[in-house]
Image 1 (cartoon, rainbow, N blue to C red):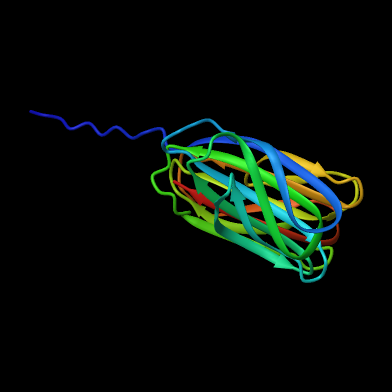
Image 2 (spheres, rainbow, N blue to C red; image 1 turned 90 degrees about the vertical axis):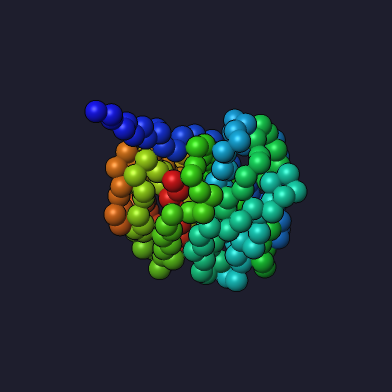
Length: 216
């Protein structure tokens, strides 16, 4: 009698690489230099959250890593606040990330994660939330495949306090000296999650934007 043994891999490997913030008077582009892009990996997928706070029509338009264009995965924008998730392969070590926007922005936020061992570079699911004035919590829901990982990124106008995440584990939080905040969270799951609810609760004084996605 013969036996067939099925061995399932450990799934996606998830590395949170932290967040970055920049404030200026008003610009339509900004380059974050010497950013940690994670370990080298033939199966590495760099996920980047980019967010801005600017004039009423301002929105993140594009993002490049060392001059190479990243692919947009999810977007939430309104009232001069914009949060987007991008992804790109073939990037590791340290490098420069350039963000461009329309109409100018005064506050810029960046969050980074490295996924290794992904089966597909196409996101399994996404979720977006355009917050109304002072709305909190901001909540999105999306599926996460078995042995996959979920990532979320939020920006908004805030004063004081911190952000409480549910559904995912906070990786970083950066609050500007005036009134802006960028924060991100992620988590790997051993079992499939159907319509995973992810919330970010904080004191929103203007508007907040939340985006999330999953990969396997």
